[in-house]
Image 1 (cartoon, helix red, strand yellow):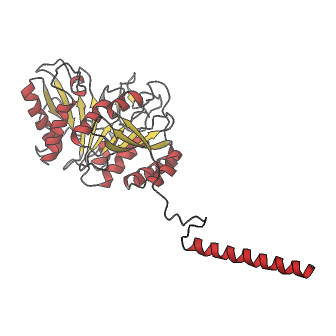
Image 2: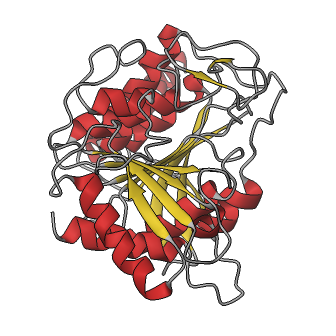
Length: 367
């Protein structure tokens, strides 16, 4: 009897072993007998998608560090290097790498569908916790290559929402908006230049994105500039009534344009072409003029000569401390605007962000 049991058990073991071998063979050939086939390469990452009116989003939903709050955090050197790699991966559309690395610099990757612009698709980096590090978007479908840069979205009122209107109208490929008030922190920047915008005259603050090199905002501008020899950076500013009156009449100074210098430049330079195009727009409206810092004039104010990104784009290797000296073929436009040009008040006023956008389009087409 014991011998018979041993024979039965041996037969059962052989049967189980044979079934196991057959199952393994089927799985190896992609069979469907319960195993999982080789999944192949990782699928595309699932990116958080938001359907928004981008203009309203940056004006009402995006959160900003406020003035005199000490809420801005200066990134460490290591964080700046991580951000450089993050932006490079984003521009390479390596979204899986962006998603896995974004948190290390305090960002999330978003796919924003601009519902007020024919559902235009943008990929954006947004802060996960408010530290004033900025908001950065790329439109990969844009045939253009220019960059709209907004360093003072709160101090220069409406420049954040205006930049979206201009992006839509001109097809800008890149958008960067600071998420910190320029006066949020008391600590001063090591970069050259002085101002009284935050109180007593003195050095610029570390939270002033137009006057520091130790920020994500500056590094984003550097990377997109270096990415292509055709990229032009248009930095959007606002100026007050003393330098840029906005009374809705012919005496208005609607804009002050600069390539980062007060030196006179040829009419063919980008700054002077844009100035001519904007004045052509304004002439028919009889509501003021645009002024170039690079045309003969005794009125050369707000020319952006200490702007760090402008200095870099104009070839200065040490833009924190030193002014640029070469402006031929400059790909930098520093645009100061009166209050009228920065907003569409909906009251029938013809000087609006669209006025500037049309002049930009004509400038880009002809150069």
